[in-house]
Amino acid sequence: MPGERILATGASGRLGAVLREHAAMTSRRLACWSGPTTRDPGLRPVEITDPRAVETALAADDPSVVIHAAAVSAAGEAYRDPERARKVNVEATARVADWCVRHHRRLILVSTDLVFDGTGSWRAEDDLARPVMVYGQTKRAAEMVLEGRPGCLSARMSLLYGPTPSARGSFFDQAIASLRSGVPQAFFTDEFRTPLDYATAARVLLMLATTHLIGIVHVGGPERMSRHEHMRQCAIALGIDPTLALPNQSRDVPSAEPRPLDVSLDSSRLLEHLPDLRRPTVRDALAAR
Image (cartoon, rainbow, N blue to C red; front, side, top):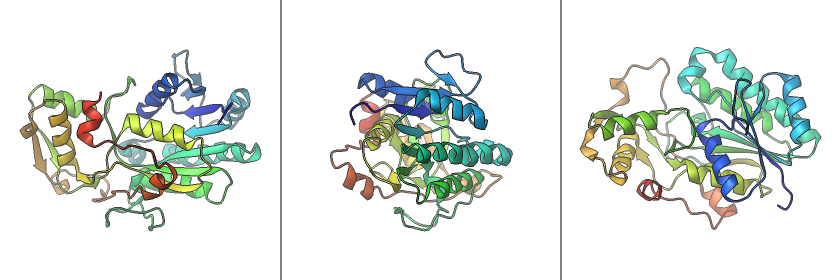
């Protein structure tokens, strides 16, 4: 899309950092927002829950496309502070969507596979979304804000993994560091996702920015696997002893919220609109880094 001006909110997060990296490599024009305390000169500090701050920053950047990744995205954090999660994940999304609709701009919301209750495999976009976790509930509410609005797309991401330039650590980083040091780690054999590496996820979002696809689209990897098998494959790709990844089940670890067991995504619609998209396997994605 010639002359497009893309804005990425939440650009200091793990996905946002890879978006910045990929945009720079492909010479894409990308304005980037982070929270109000950021000291990174490449990021605009914006309090996403402040209506006036959001309106002022949108007017200043004047994007043609917004990739809205800002969120309370840690499930535990959303559970502990559901009011904050609602303000960030739902109300701020509505605010950005209102601006985009008024100004005839495109909006891509980064959503999640956790809008499903975990009772089925290879979920399609028109399958019933019935989230059981607070985080998934807020993201589903944000999707509903976008329903029927012109130019708006909810991109449901599956489990994202892999290295990123972000300074924010992740479960993946911690687990790989432990395995590298020879410390065994246990992972669930009964929770299934369609994991996708950050680099491919960022590339997909930038590709979707140039399409007219609206509604909902699933963005998952090509393999349905348990968390245990996922970490085994990661270990193999990184030259780590895969036997250090031990099996356990979700019932072995107490959780404040119910955990959906299978939120694997069918990404057929995505591939119909991006037929040249290559989604690497877990081993291939990590071997390429």
